[in-house]
Amino acid sequence: MAEEFNVTPDDQFFLGEDKIFELSVYESDGVTPLDVIGIPLEWSLKKTDRAADPGIIAKGISAGGVSTGITIVGVFNADPNLNTQKVRITFTDDDTDPAVTSELESGAYTLRANRAYRHSLKRMDSPNENVLMYGSVTFLQATER
Image 1 (spheres, rainbow, N blue to C red):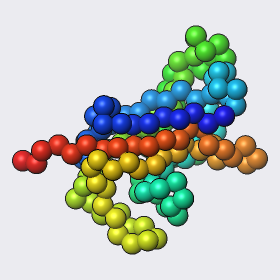
Image 2: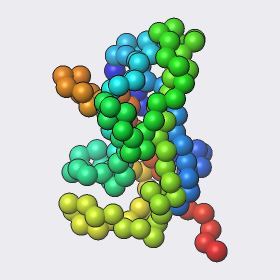
Image 3: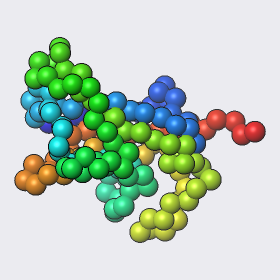
């Protein structure tokens, strides 16, 4: 069962800043922690749920542990009260710099403040490919110097 995780203006994720998300991931029952060590994961941010790949921002980790913005931190335990394992997604200021334009299939695109984008975290190992987490992300704009 995929878990909904929304980043709202209350979370204060500003365009052009460094940010880290640490997410707990669960089995399909939504209660039992999922041990994600060795599982390839992919996180992407898109304009809409149905937008074509690639996403505006993409992060991942391969089965061999090669990271492009996702790392696994903490220690896994099947007991939810003892599990400290998290999926850490790291954003640099360049990832969300409003001055940088991304090249998408639909053309050039620049991130905007106060617009709800869609994101998802997917498990990518066949035959277990599925969405683990999804939701919206709304960025804020800080004042310019």
